Image 1 (cartoon, rainbow over the protein chains, first blue to last red):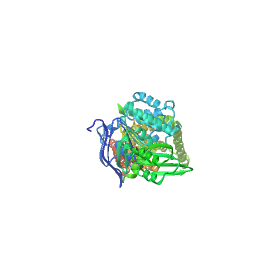
Image 2: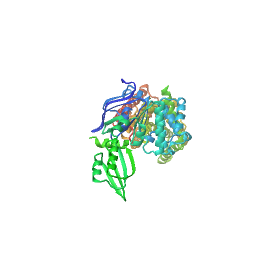
Image 3: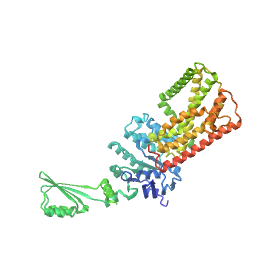
Image 4: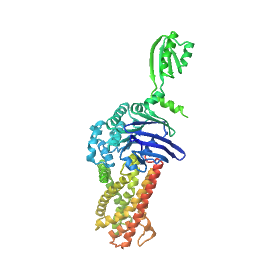
Length: 315
Length: 254
């Protein structure tokens, strides 16, 4: 691996299940201390990609290097520096307590109970599991079980964490606390995280860079900032006292697709501007036509809009 | 050192499991004893109340051997099935020490547990029949261990099949009945039935414990070779299915 900052390098990864192509020539890199989000519709190859990097699925062709080590050839050495939550709360033993789970998963990675003790205490406290550390996991809510699973994946202090749908089935509060915890891991401990999720808010608020995959192929690999800049669209909603004239409507249409809804003397104009700076032109159109503006609001494209736009746009 | 930590961790897991499922462990001893009682009274009823001492002794040892065989054969296959059901199998495969080592230690722990369990059952059975056998424990456990290795191989085969097909519980039901029949087969001096797993070793333990039969050295070597064959075959088949499961992404699916 030429660039020492690159921790994971995937080159032309291909995986098929019979005639179904799950991953079709995927290439990307993940740098140290980066949170890389992987987005894609169901069956797009996200989980297969994660599992291939972990050596849980044998790929057909292509190259996977983690820390310069090849998978699956050097799989065991790669696993020294990796932790993963792949099936959420099912990844742990429900008949054991959080403490016992952590001791067990540390042990099977060769970390003794004595050496793991400070990390176990720290994780239990950080994830607010300390008071229930000796209770059986089966009594917990799904959010708490998920927290235990996350702690178990991290108990041996891995350099890279793989999270497959970590917020699935979680309530907003737990998803928020999970997000905070993951951010701390990256900022304070320099960990690298690969995360797949359908939760766009989660990805948008957490990831530095996003891969968008469709049918096993990458259709976008860039930072959230550049993605947003590229697909930036401002939606303007204006409440008017009277409907637009024909000339105003035609002029507004030239700025972007617009829609007018009239209801009991209140008329709403919603327009998605092709270019955000054309908002001034819109204001001119309204002023020149003598429209009275009662209210005004704008909104930017979020990741979900961009994702849907890309998924629908690509052939 | 790390392997020792893994061994200790697996021992600890067994301890936690036994503590959590203490009632289940106790119930297992009780149920198996009740099965023996049913068998014992059934045989006596069929024989009109008179059963020879040797037959009783043979029944006691045979029952204990069957228990040991059943528990051993369920070893790795059962573990794979359980882990697959609970969703933890992939996590075991993420251990840098290897899932095969985890299963190996679980197997060793299982055999140790089974030794304790069958010893309790042996004494309970002897007390019930009123016939106290003089058991040479080092010999009994030694030959038993030697022959059990063949079933460990079968267990790994089952484990491998379990990785792909997941639900293999019904096969164990068939195997448990097959084992009873297999243990009654004539194997000594060498017959083709001796090629089957475990039966040569089971016959050796039973005959030497009940009748004091002394076997020649070549026979023990044969028992060892038989076990080694099934063990190696089992491990290889497990590895083949493991690779297949990884190719088909079957590790985490149940």
